[in-house]
Image (cartoon, rainbow, N blue to C red; front, top):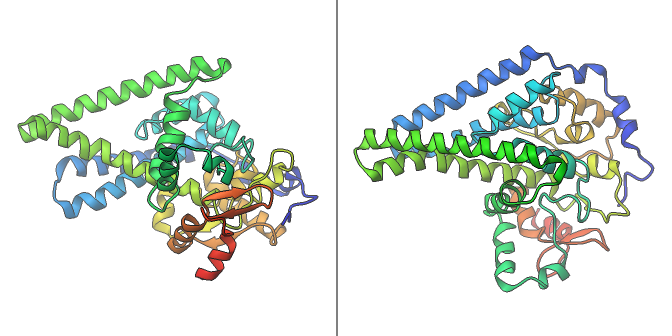
Length: 354
């Protein structure tokens, strides 16, 4: 249903008070110091301890700590964290390093493609659905990979391959951005080499063996990075994949459909939001990327008040994610509905499971 017919994104933006755009430098720097301190504490703990009962929660905390830093970089990439363009670049570059993300490649893929064409066929590459015809035309191994990536356990694999590798590491950037992206790729490569070398040397001294050196690198760098990939993959998934979220043919798409109808405002715990920096209030972020993360709740209140029948708000529940990953496999752009691999409409499956 096209509930956004006749609506205009600019009209939504005009409703937002000026206060939601205020981004004093001290506030961004304070969050930067806090999140770096948390990340440093988790890294120290991972270096210091090996007990499995400590490592498991520490790996999850490491993934969350990387997420907190990354979301600061995400705001910096949008120019929302600071007024200074240079400060946004320097901070954004630094806080994306633990995630091994290339700053200018992220700006291209996330800002220009994802935000510019959210839930638009052939344009928004993040968790872009395949049609039944496209799926059946794939070779067998790619159909198998699709089933794994679009399962409840596939978010990190999908993000690592489709977003990170194909859109950030091994791709040909457009000429106008190639120099900046190549520069930032070299910065990430240098960070990875230095961090890996330091951890291997530290592990060799701490454990007295090559195996110990590799273990130090694995537990401090590799596993937290894998945890981060699964976190961001799942977060991006729930923002834009749901039986109620329509994807649109290019000619039928509008900015209102993409930015207001194409995502959800989730309510999450204070503990989780400590790391997620209000990014789950995703509708106002898509309405206007210039809003700093700590102003998103205020902007969300305004938008929900004025568009109560359009904006989806709900508590984030694991059950909803599991139902979506069971039922949202392919997309029928003619009917505007998600289906499973057998062609059953996702909405009917979710209602039956409720």
